[in-house]
Amino acid sequence: MKPYQCHEPYDWSALLRLIQSEFAYMGGRIDPPSSMHRLSLEAIAAQARDGEVWAIGKPPIACVFLTPRTDALYVGKLAVAAHHRGKGLARALLALAETRAKALGFAALELETRVELVENHTVFRALGFVETGRKAHAGFDRPTSITFRRPVSKP
Image (tube, rainbow, N blue to C red):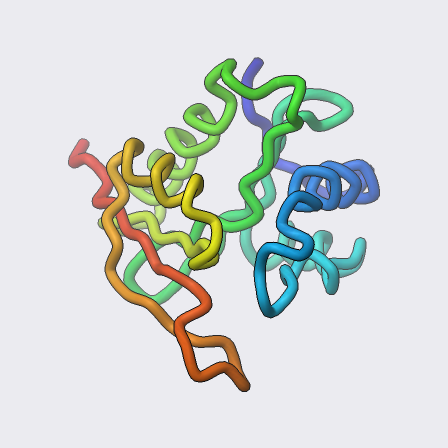
């Protein structure tokens, strides 16, 4: 299955359900709670207008948000439905992110994951990402998030 970019009109509620379903495992594991809890249909539509939203499948079984930052393309809300994992969908979305980064003139992809989600750290390292920093959410005196980066290959 091939990724496609999501534009209005789109069933943003299907994307929200996918993200909520696939991020639910974080409940009780991470502190502060995931920003997924504040995600709305309007916020997803705004992401599609101001950045990019990509999905695979109809209804979506995988998705990713791409946001230009100062020196990297930020990869957010990467989600793959549990019953479709292991089929290369996350890799396909990250390959797409790399293609988009090149097209937009960025030399790197960047993403963040929570300190507690050690299985995500392992996956991202295996995909060529390296830790570049840690930060604390507002009100916390310890790191709560890890930033990972991966250079994009040159054309």
